[in-house]
Structures are given as C-alpha cells and as structure tokens.
Length: 585
Image (cartoon, rainbow, N blue to C red; front, side, top):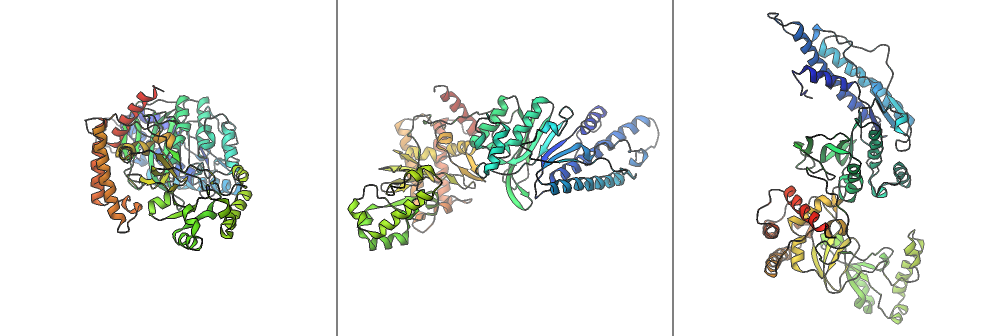
C-alpha cells in the first residue's frame, strides 16, 4: 500500500490521527469466522506502519538538518508510543457464540503477527503485554440490534464489512421479516437483497454522525434494475453520496465464486470520486476519477428511472407469456407428443407448440394440450385426457397458490392465458450475461409463449431491429435486474422506458431489410443444427456479427449523425431522451 502524502508532514499527521478512529462493524459469517475483520485489521496495521515510518523520517530530518553524512535508519527512533491501532477498535456482530469466540482469538493472533512485522520493520521488539482488551464481537442479529448500543457513534469514523450474499429471491421468511424491521416504510424493501439492511442500518448511523464513511462488499444486484432505484436513489434523496465504487467483479468467497461490487458512501460530498472498472469479471481493476457515481455505479448523474406501464414512444404493449403453472400434465416433449397424437388422433388439433426461454435458446420443441375450446364430448370420452386433467386438478388443489386453488374445477384452462393470434416477438426474460445481444425471435399462431418470456404482439421487423440493436442492449444492460450474472429483462423498466428514434417510412424499411439479413443468416445455421445459444455466445459467427454491426450502425444513425464513442456515451444519450420524454407524461 502506497502513502500518497510522502514528504508532507501535515498530511501524514492527519492520516495518522484518522487511523486512531477507525471502527469496523461487520456481520461475521459462519464460513468466514471473522476473516473480513482480521484482514481489515492486518491491512490497517500495515498502513499504520507505513505512516509511522514516514513520520519518523520527517522528524529525523528536522532533528538532523545540516548534519554531514547522516543517514536515517528505522532503528534510531522508538516506536513504543507510535503504534496505536489495536483490536479493541474493531466491532462485529455474530449469530453464533463459537464464531464470535473464533473471531476474537483470530484478531489477537493477527495482532501478534503484526507486532512481529513491526518488530522486523523497525528493528525493535514490539509486544503488547499484558494483553489489551480484545475485539468487541457481540453475539446478536446485526439487523435486529441497535448499532448505537454496540459502537460509540460519536467516535466512529468508518463502517465496513461483507454482509451475507442473499439475493431478494433467496431470502427466507425470517430474512424478509428482519429486512422489513430495519425500515418498514422504505420503498420496495421487500424486493431488495438481504444485504440492503446493512446499507440502511449504516445510513442511520451516519444520520447521527455525518462524518462517518461506509463501505460494503455486496451482491451486485443492488446496483441493477429496480433494486438500484429502491436502495441507492432513496439514499441519494437522503443526502448520501457514493464516493468510490468497484463495478461488478468475481470474488472467491471461501471457495464460492460470487459476483460482487464494493460501494463506499457517506454524507460527505467529494469533488473527485474513484470508480474501479473491470473489462471482464476476472480482469484487473482500472481506476477512473470521476465527478459523480450514480445508482448503477456509472460515472454520471443519478438516473432515477421509474417503471412505466405504457411504452414511452407509443409502441405496442409488451406482455408476459402464458403461465403454465400446475399445468405440466398437459405438456409434452417431442417424442411424447408424437406418441400421444398417434394414440389419440383428435388431440392433434388442440396441440400447440410451446416456447419458453429454454426452448428459444436451445431450439427444441415442446407442446401443450390447449383444451380451452375443445368439445366436452371429446374430453369426456378419452380416459388418457381425463387422467391428465385430474392430475392438473390435484396439483392445483395441493398448491400453496390461492389462485391455483380457485382453479381446481377448470383444469382445461391455463393458469393465466395470454395466448396470441398472429405474429409476435418473443424475448427471453432471463438470458446469459455473456451475450452481447439478447436473442429475440419471431413467432406466430399457433405457438404459445410461456411466462418465461415476454411477447410483443403486432411487432414488425423495424421494431425487431431496434430491440435487437446495440442501442437497446446498452439501455437494457444498465437498467435491467440480474439473476447472478444473467440479464433479467423487464417490460416496465427496460422496454417501456426505452425511447425509440423518430423515423420515416424509408428509414424503417432500411432497418427491416437489415433485419432480413440477420434472420436469413440465423436460418442458415438452424438448418445445420446450430442453436440460438451457440450463435449468441461469447464468439458469434463472423457473418452474423457483421450483419448485427450493419444493423447497429443504421440504428445509431437514426438517433444522431455523430458516431457514439462508447456504450456509456450511448446510454447517456438515451438517458437525455428519456428525461425529455418523461416530462410529457
């Protein structure tokens, strides 16, 4: 670790004093047993050693001005009263008593190792005897206990930690109750990751003492989609600022590979903020100094996007596909389908191709027996069909879903029927984060899209071209939520807020022609057995990439004549359009 203030005695003294006032609040994990606190203490001590060394050099230079041939040595000056950081400045909360004991012991051991490092560095034996007070590790629930009862808030300088990585969909009932108890009136609290509780608890501490600064390693999903809006936009409204951040990177959390961010925030508004970017999940961080960091951890003003229930440019409504919940007994794979219609020929008329996200990306077929308009006489005269309908009834009766319970007596109806006639676009809701483009396809009657996809009725090739363009992908990648590293598309937050360019018929026809080229190349690969997931993987086929590049350039010219320099440039331009259009609503 480098000390930036070399040569400046005033700056070094200030840094030295700040070290004396650091406290850590971390919810220790069973797997880590205080690892985070131990590493934080080790690095803080090493930083202190560097500062002490520089301060001693400055003092020695002052005392030996004009002395010919004098050379500084670390061993010349005493350090007994110089090293002031100790484990009693560290605070933590643990659910399990044994983990708290291990953490206390671990910090004592790290303290001993750091004393040995100090002895070696300064050439003087340094030891703390008798043993000082240990770390303040409390056995409690970090979201239930009042942190002010644990840490003296007026003396607190820093809060840091790595709270539990539990996504909002993975929260247990108890997790959900604990999170809500932290801030019952916080907007969207139920849809936030568990780690958000630590951000909110820390913000309350900083309300009492605005000089406190906080940094957490956390799940990256809190800086994506609606969570970014519900957590950080609300913090911004309360006067907090993100002063440094690491964008998403891969972290080894005791053997588990997790995608995380690091966020440093406080009431202090710094002119220059540090943003660490990563070209890939495993790449080295690249530091960029910026004037602002927003809720998506981008170097720009806060977006404060809000979900919309109509498309901002007046395009067709995007809706979920039909929900097949409790209807699996009426679903068939290709081989099962062939056998069933051979055995019961009349069912072929009611068999409908089924497409969800997996079917779309893997190019395989499934079918559903869609009996909404089937003749009762046919159904009642066929035991095999009745058996499957009875299975649907049983599944709905035993379901914990209230709506499913209410539909026990209507097994021929889908759980939610959003079946479309005519042509429509199908967009997978969840798709790999490795893809540059979300694979969108055209479908038509009689295909039924499942609720693992969105469907866009009355969509033409022009709309397809805009949605499959880099401009739309840039908007999507920032505003979308994620499942781990995968994109989780949203009709209300991504599609409805995306501003289409103003065009004439000729321009739309040009886009449609370029879309034809993309679709023709796809079809060529489908005929030789390739799948969508293969075409839109890390390495796209050259001809398909070239076709997408042409489409991208044409779409971008519809927005402005001047080329875009980067994806951030594209997003900022779209954001300006969004802010202009949202004022009309």
